[in-house]
Length: 354
Image (cartoon, rainbow, N blue to C red; front, side, top):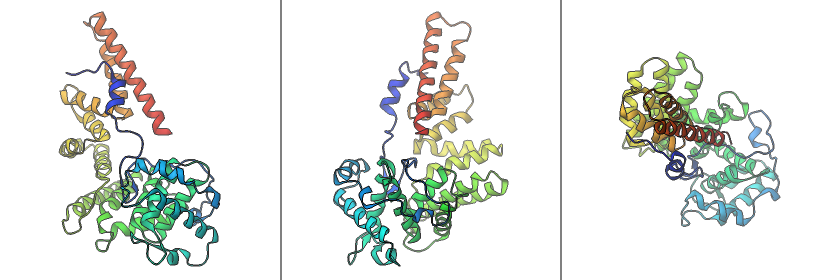
């Protein structure tokens, strides 16, 4: 069995960067934790409140710095496009003339007749949310809320996931329009946004699972099943970016219902293909302690940034250090490894809370 004597070094080498790596139409794949800023009112129109000024638009160098990590090809959208779109959008939002969203914006990917494209604005919102300080993040939230009001699927999914991760999608009045738009998107089997339906169903299923009731879990499982069907329908060309989330939540429900065989079956069928730290950890915890795959899966999850897996690795090494029959060198080595894994777990936990 392979046991790493440098787990922290391995973690640095193998884990994915915590910076944004992959986007689809500006839909975030990273954990949604916008920077701090002015609080918005707790009502349906709270995100529409303008708590920023024209001077809060980041200058041109900001866009040159932060658009590059998003891996957006220059021939699709440029930092200059985002800077100009943000500047125009903020001006329109501050003026807040009647019907400005429908009149001055378009949900098409290309601007038409002087309108600002929501496609460009979606990409503009992402760096504002994740890389900005002061009031700039609330320009990003305002943009996403506008996308929700216009029925723009990437904005709906991004804001819904933010609300879900903060456990506000089901309870906060600010997210009420987003939840309604998500439900509509999940129910739509025709139209230009059909390809987003699997992810909409995934978020909706996760929302039902969050209720923690048998009825909620039943609805969640139906959503995940429907998401899988929608993703496999060739005529829709659906894209299931959050398949891992659906599988993870589905298996959590099976475990809570003591249907561990079903959870094991689902994870075994997907864990190698998806190669996700969270799924690796979940699968490992369902394996027999003596199964050699368990340690391999735990270590893979731990060095990829899963704090729970790192804690389990620390626990196992400390138990081993107390085992009779070890040489002094083996005992010290296990103790050091346990400390290393615990340090990784604590660092990951701090990073998750940032």
